[in-house]
Image 1 (cartoon, helix red, strand yellow):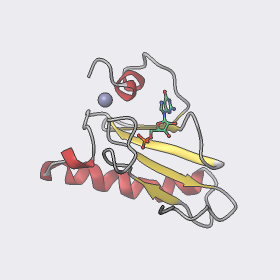
Image 2 (image 1 turned 90 degrees about the horizontal axis):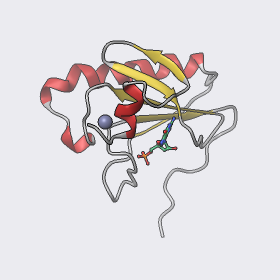
Image 3 (image 1 turned 90 degrees about the vertical axis):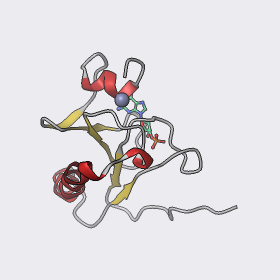
Image 4 (image 1 turned 30 degrees about the vertical axis):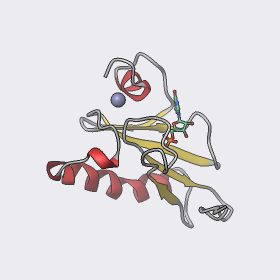
Length: 116
Ligand code: 5GP
Ligand code: ZN
């Protein structure tokens, strides 16, 4: 995807603060962190959102979820963390390349849902 910011990061056209990479996945720190630890887990294959995932991506999605606690611990989340996948307009998704936010730090995170 030519104009996708995360595809540009995957192609190394835009720099990132990378913490993990393999053939399927790249993981780097969020440019605008919401907490002391805030990284993004991204499949190298361009998938617009969680709505667009397919049955044959089960192992890719599982692999990412299994990596989350390992990397969270490595990054300093010893006592919990939060995983978020913003999806679509209502979910507040801003970058339409599927990504998993992993957010944590030493203090308890703020409540997640602010209803109006
Ligand atoms: P979304 O709202 O789509 O779930 O979150 C997109 C996230 O991507 C935001 O937290 C934003 O700070 C992050 N982001 C957007 N552009 C860049 C970038 O160029 N580099 C990095 N590292 N993060 C980005
Ligand atoms: Zn993309």
